[in-house]
Image 1 (cartoon, rainbow, N blue to C red):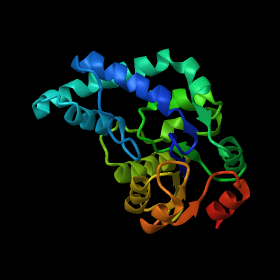
Image 2: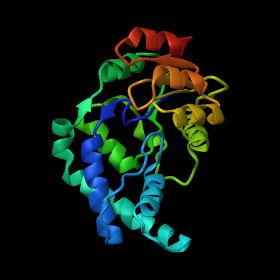
Image 3: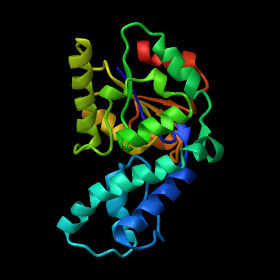
Image 4: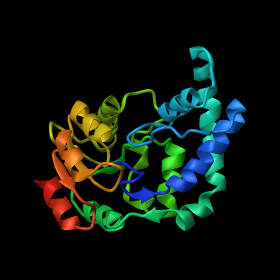
Length: 230
Protein backbone atom coordinates (compact mmCIF):
# COMPACT_ATOMS: atom_id res chain seq x y z
CA UNK A 1 0.00 0.00 0.00
CA UNK A 2 1.27 3.45 -0.91
CA UNK A 3 -0.09 6.39 1.07
CA UNK A 4 0.41 9.99 0.01
CA UNK A 5 0.30 13.18 1.98
CA UNK A 6 -1.47 15.88 -0.05
CA UNK A 7 -0.37 19.41 0.89
CA UNK A 8 3.23 20.25 -0.03
CA UNK A 9 3.83 16.68 -1.17
CA UNK A 10 1.58 16.59 -4.23
CA UNK A 11 0.16 20.12 -4.42
CA UNK A 12 0.82 23.55 -2.96
CA UNK A 13 -2.46 25.39 -2.40
CA UNK A 14 -1.39 27.15 0.79
CA UNK A 15 -2.56 30.61 -0.27
CA UNK A 16 -6.09 29.43 -1.03
CA UNK A 17 -6.24 27.20 2.04
CA UNK A 18 -5.15 30.05 4.32
CA UNK A 19 -7.87 32.32 2.98
CA UNK A 20 -10.50 29.62 3.47
CA UNK A 21 -9.21 28.86 6.97
CA UNK A 22 -9.29 32.54 7.97
CA UNK A 23 -12.84 32.98 6.69
CA UNK A 24 -14.09 29.85 8.48
CA UNK A 25 -12.30 30.84 11.70
CA UNK A 26 -13.90 34.28 11.77
CA UNK A 27 -17.34 32.89 10.94
CA UNK A 28 -17.22 30.38 13.79
CA UNK A 29 -15.43 32.40 16.48
CA UNK A 30 -16.36 35.97 15.55
CA UNK A 31 -12.66 36.87 15.76
CA UNK A 32 -10.29 37.61 12.88
CA UNK A 33 -7.40 35.24 12.28
CA UNK A 34 -4.39 37.45 12.98
CA UNK A 35 -1.78 34.81 13.80
CA UNK A 36 -1.51 31.71 11.64
CA UNK A 37 -1.00 28.30 13.25
CA UNK A 38 1.72 25.89 12.20
CA UNK A 39 0.55 23.66 9.37
CA UNK A 40 3.34 21.17 8.56
CA UNK A 41 2.25 17.67 9.46
CA UNK A 42 -0.80 18.94 11.34
CA UNK A 43 -4.47 18.09 10.96
CA UNK A 44 -7.22 20.65 10.47
CA UNK A 45 -8.48 20.18 14.07
CA UNK A 46 -4.96 20.69 15.44
CA UNK A 47 -4.60 23.88 13.42
CA UNK A 48 -7.99 25.11 14.66
CA UNK A 49 -7.13 24.58 18.33
CA UNK A 50 -3.71 26.21 17.84
CA UNK A 51 -5.38 29.17 16.13
CA UNK A 52 -7.74 29.63 19.07
CA UNK A 53 -4.81 29.92 21.46
CA UNK A 54 -2.68 32.09 19.17
CA UNK A 55 -5.49 34.54 18.56
CA UNK A 56 -6.61 34.93 22.15
CA UNK A 57 -9.92 33.10 21.88
CA UNK A 58 -10.34 31.92 25.48
CA UNK A 59 -12.81 29.06 25.67
CA UNK A 60 -13.36 26.13 27.96
CA UNK A 61 -12.22 22.81 26.55
CA UNK A 62 -15.78 21.66 25.92
CA UNK A 63 -16.59 24.91 24.12
CA UNK A 64 -13.54 24.48 21.88
CA UNK A 65 -14.61 20.93 21.05
CA UNK A 66 -18.15 22.14 20.38
CA UNK A 67 -16.88 24.62 17.79
CA UNK A 68 -14.78 22.06 15.94
CA UNK A 69 -17.59 20.51 13.88
CA UNK A 70 -19.03 23.90 12.78
CA UNK A 71 -15.50 25.02 11.89
CA UNK A 72 -14.92 21.90 9.79
CA UNK A 73 -18.16 22.49 7.91
CA UNK A 74 -17.35 26.16 7.34
CA UNK A 75 -13.84 25.34 6.16
CA UNK A 76 -15.18 22.87 3.61
CA UNK A 77 -17.68 25.47 2.39
CA UNK A 78 -15.04 28.22 2.18
CA UNK A 79 -12.58 26.03 0.30
CA UNK A 80 -15.25 24.76 -2.10
CA UNK A 81 -16.18 28.37 -2.88
CA UNK A 82 -12.55 28.91 -3.93
CA UNK A 83 -12.18 25.72 -5.99
CA UNK A 84 -11.50 27.70 -9.17
CA UNK A 85 -8.57 29.44 -7.48
CA UNK A 86 -6.78 26.23 -6.55
CA UNK A 87 -5.10 25.91 -9.94
CA UNK A 88 -4.74 29.68 -10.39
CA UNK A 89 -3.10 30.55 -7.07
CA UNK A 90 -1.86 27.03 -6.31
CA UNK A 91 0.35 24.61 -8.19
CA UNK A 92 0.93 20.95 -8.85
CA UNK A 93 4.35 20.03 -7.50
CA UNK A 94 6.95 18.80 -9.96
CA UNK A 95 6.75 15.10 -10.69
CA UNK A 96 3.61 14.52 -8.63
CA UNK A 97 1.38 13.40 -11.50
CA UNK A 98 4.10 11.28 -13.08
CA UNK A 99 4.89 9.59 -9.77
CA UNK A 100 1.24 8.76 -9.06
CA UNK A 101 0.87 7.39 -12.58
CA UNK A 102 4.00 5.26 -12.21
CA UNK A 103 2.84 3.76 -8.92
CA UNK A 104 -0.58 3.06 -10.44
CA UNK A 105 1.08 0.70 -12.92
CA UNK A 106 2.49 -1.51 -10.18
CA UNK A 107 0.56 -4.75 -9.83
CA UNK A 108 -0.95 -5.49 -6.43
CA UNK A 109 -0.45 -1.96 -5.10
CA UNK A 110 -3.22 0.20 -3.65
CA UNK A 111 -2.72 3.98 -3.59
CA UNK A 112 -4.52 6.24 -1.16
CA UNK A 113 -3.89 9.28 1.05
CA UNK A 114 -3.00 9.95 4.66
CA UNK A 115 -3.52 13.65 5.17
CA UNK A 116 -4.34 16.32 7.71
CA UNK A 117 -7.19 17.54 5.50
CA UNK A 118 -10.75 16.32 5.80
CA UNK A 119 -11.90 13.87 3.16
CA UNK A 120 -13.95 16.56 1.37
CA UNK A 121 -11.05 19.01 1.29
CA UNK A 122 -8.49 16.42 0.24
CA UNK A 123 -10.74 15.25 -2.60
CA UNK A 124 -11.29 18.84 -3.73
CA UNK A 125 -7.57 19.60 -3.87
CA UNK A 126 -6.72 16.41 -5.73
CA UNK A 127 -9.62 16.76 -8.17
CA UNK A 128 -8.56 20.31 -9.06
CA UNK A 129 -5.31 18.93 -10.48
CA UNK A 130 -6.72 15.68 -11.87
CA UNK A 131 -4.97 13.52 -9.28
CA UNK A 132 -7.98 11.91 -7.64
CA UNK A 133 -8.22 9.26 -10.36
CA UNK A 134 -4.98 7.67 -9.14
CA UNK A 135 -6.02 7.07 -5.52
CA UNK A 136 -8.73 5.19 -3.66
CA UNK A 137 -10.03 7.84 -1.30
CA UNK A 138 -12.38 5.33 0.31
CA UNK A 139 -9.57 3.64 2.23
CA UNK A 140 -7.65 6.82 3.05
CA UNK A 141 -7.00 8.48 6.41
CA UNK A 142 -8.07 12.06 7.09
CA UNK A 143 -7.41 14.78 9.62
CA UNK A 144 -11.06 14.99 10.58
CA UNK A 145 -10.89 11.47 12.05
CA UNK A 146 -10.30 11.01 15.77
CA UNK A 147 -6.96 9.20 15.56
CA UNK A 148 -3.35 10.32 15.93
CA UNK A 149 -1.76 10.09 12.51
CA UNK A 150 0.36 7.05 13.35
CA UNK A 151 -2.73 5.15 14.49
CA UNK A 152 -4.65 6.45 11.49
CA UNK A 153 -2.04 4.91 9.21
CA UNK A 154 -2.83 1.54 10.75
CA UNK A 155 -6.55 2.18 10.23
CA UNK A 156 -6.03 2.86 6.53
CA UNK A 157 -4.09 -0.39 6.26
CA UNK A 158 -7.00 -2.28 7.83
CA UNK A 159 -9.45 -0.61 5.45
CA UNK A 160 -7.40 -1.66 2.44
CA UNK A 161 -7.02 -5.21 3.72
CA UNK A 162 -10.79 -5.52 4.21
CA UNK A 163 -11.71 -3.96 0.87
CA UNK A 164 -9.15 -5.72 -1.30
CA UNK A 165 -8.74 -8.97 0.60
CA UNK A 166 -5.03 -8.39 0.94
CA UNK A 167 -2.58 -8.88 3.79
CA UNK A 168 -0.23 -5.98 4.48
CA UNK A 169 2.57 -7.22 6.67
CA UNK A 170 5.50 -5.29 8.14
CA UNK A 171 7.12 -3.00 5.60
CA UNK A 172 4.32 -3.45 3.07
CA UNK A 173 3.08 0.12 3.53
CA UNK A 174 4.95 3.17 2.26
CA UNK A 175 4.05 6.71 3.38
CA UNK A 176 5.22 9.51 1.08
CA UNK A 177 5.12 12.89 2.78
CA UNK A 178 7.14 16.02 3.50
CA UNK A 179 7.34 16.82 7.23
CA UNK A 180 9.15 15.42 10.28
CA UNK A 181 5.78 14.71 11.92
CA UNK A 182 4.85 12.57 8.92
CA UNK A 183 8.06 10.60 9.31
CA UNK A 184 7.17 9.96 12.95
CA UNK A 185 3.66 8.87 11.95
CA UNK A 186 5.15 6.33 9.55
CA UNK A 187 7.41 4.97 12.29
CA UNK A 188 4.53 4.66 14.77
CA UNK A 189 2.27 3.12 12.12
CA UNK A 190 4.85 0.54 11.04
CA UNK A 191 5.38 1.93 7.54
CA UNK A 192 8.43 2.82 5.51
CA UNK A 193 8.70 6.58 5.05
CA UNK A 194 9.68 8.34 1.87
CA UNK A 195 10.29 11.93 2.91
CA UNK A 196 10.21 14.50 0.12
CA UNK A 197 11.89 17.86 0.73
CA UNK A 198 9.12 19.76 -1.05
CA UNK A 199 7.71 21.26 2.15
CA UNK A 200 9.23 23.28 4.98
CA UNK A 201 11.84 20.68 6.01
CA UNK A 202 15.21 20.21 4.32
CA UNK A 203 16.65 16.86 3.25
CA UNK A 204 19.04 17.03 6.22
CA UNK A 205 16.19 17.60 8.70
CA UNK A 206 14.23 14.71 7.23
CA UNK A 207 17.23 12.39 7.48
CA UNK A 208 17.85 13.49 11.07
CA UNK A 209 14.34 12.47 12.17
CA UNK A 210 14.84 8.99 10.76
CA UNK A 211 13.12 8.91 7.38
CA UNK A 212 13.66 5.56 5.66
CA UNK A 213 14.37 7.34 2.37
CA UNK A 214 14.73 11.03 1.49
CA UNK A 215 14.13 12.55 -1.93
CA UNK A 216 14.66 16.18 -2.96
CA UNK A 217 11.42 16.08 -5.00
CA UNK A 218 9.27 13.72 -7.06
CA UNK A 219 10.91 14.36 -10.42
CA UNK A 220 12.47 10.88 -10.61
CA UNK A 221 9.54 8.41 -10.63
CA UNK A 222 11.90 5.53 -11.42
CA UNK A 223 13.81 6.12 -8.20
CA UNK A 224 10.53 6.20 -6.29
CA UNK A 225 9.38 2.93 -7.87
CA UNK A 226 12.72 1.31 -6.97
CA UNK A 227 12.21 2.36 -3.35
CA UNK A 228 8.65 1.03 -3.21
CA UNK A 229 9.38 -2.29 -4.87
CA UNK A 230 12.63 -2.71 -2.96
